[in-house]
Length: 141
Image (cartoon, rainbow, N blue to C red; front, side):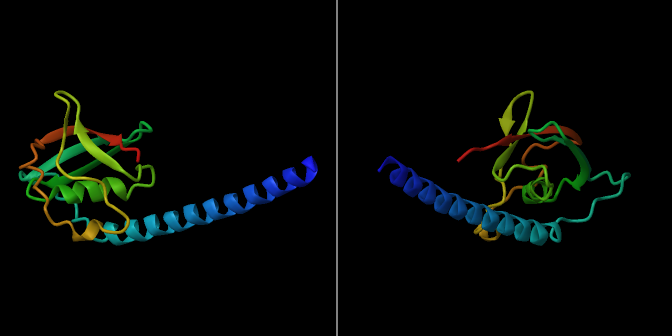
């Protein structure tokens, strides 16, 4: 009797594990499709001598650094897209300054509805300076 119960539990566990793996595989596929779409929308990097450009260094939660220039007039969405399109980026995050600590406007791309949100401020309006060190804070659901 105990053996039969154990076999049933193991079978149910295997089914559940298979379902979870399939969900994760689909989520990864959606994430990759979203990244592929967004990477095409990131504006080209301005020239080093462009006075309207800002240079940002971004520290990811795993310690990796990203560096890039953006025009100050570009939207925060461009910055979030750039971070999201990096393979080491968390799926859900916010961008923060360190001292003083404050969250910059915006949010990480959402796999389903990100493209409908057009209410973005520019980097300049968000207080991003000429050179900026920013940090990614992963948000857990």
